[in-house]
Image (cartoon, rainbow, N blue to C red):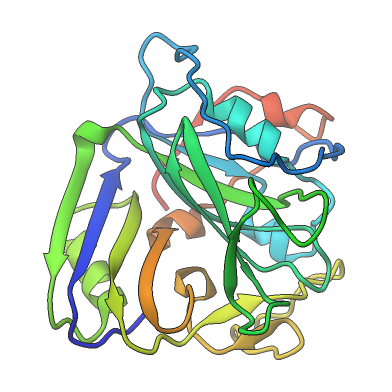
Length: 272
């Protein structure tokens, strides 16, 4: 992701070396009620005595790109899982929808008690208009075949302020490596010039052939090396993403292929 000469602020919620958990892979498809008219505020008390920074992964990148759009979770499912964390803990993530021909890019952002489900709409005039699917969407129901959320402790937040950095992505990779941060949720805030974007719009049930990279025009619109890092055109940008290593990690099914894997217990994960 490249930028011009304006101010950029990065907030990182470090997930390692603290204990990291991955919950769930595939889950049983289930119906989704219409999105609520207002974003709910979750005030539930944590269900565990001591919540820990967690990478919460629903399904895996590998299975998504292989065409698995049938095992999904809903906004209600995700909110129920987040109720086990303090409501002020920051959450960032990436994902997509199961809307064939209009999958789009998910960019969840907020806190465990107040999470926005930002979605870049490939069917919009700009091919990247952003709406909060918890409030409204182009269809009455939405399900997520892949969603990865970094849930962090506010005490571990690191803030970096950048100015006049020609390539933010390259700078971030170098800084993470230099500081020994293997896994983190990353939030970018700043003023950008033109930003090249990629929005997935047609992930087929037959899967994708990515041997030539993310260049298939019948799957992706516009062009960028890392589709999950690309968010919207020009102007003010407020986005969220997971650091590159988080996405390479993926989540294998826990405990086999039963119908209730979404409620499987968390398992320790080594950084990939």
